[in-house]
Image: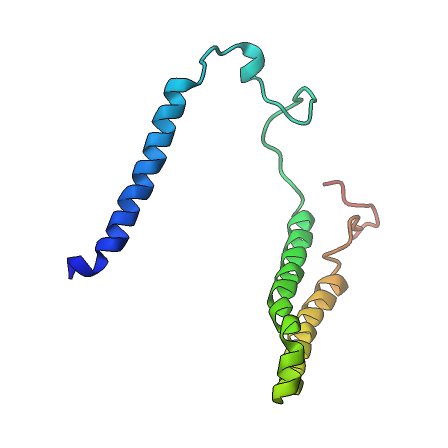
Amino acid sequence: MLFQFSHVIIFLIIAVGFVFVTLVVGKLLRPDNPSPEKKAVYECGEEPVGAGFSQFNMRFYLVAFVFVIFDVEIAVMYPVTVVFRELLESGWGLLAFIEIAIFILILLVGFIYAWSQGGLDWVRSLPDGKPETN
């Protein structure tokens, strides 16, 4: 039984050994002269101001989530579009088109729901009519 997995075990040993050897050789070869400038936080050439932790509004996460959904949609649809001509010639083109259309429709319904609930609005109004400040 162990012999059947010997290639996998050997590969894992080589991979771990490669990472270990690379880190050790890098540690031995690179210069080590720390200074306050090198240890400072670098963010686009600007001096950091305030705390390193800040809370983001949940709307940013919702917009990022909607982006990821549509990004995955493209990743799922691309292989079908590449072979769509072959699917048409073999008689499966209509089925592939209907499946992709249903897929897009489901995502579109979710997008419309998020939009109708105000999840994509950058400035929301509070019940008293004033804009939200976060």
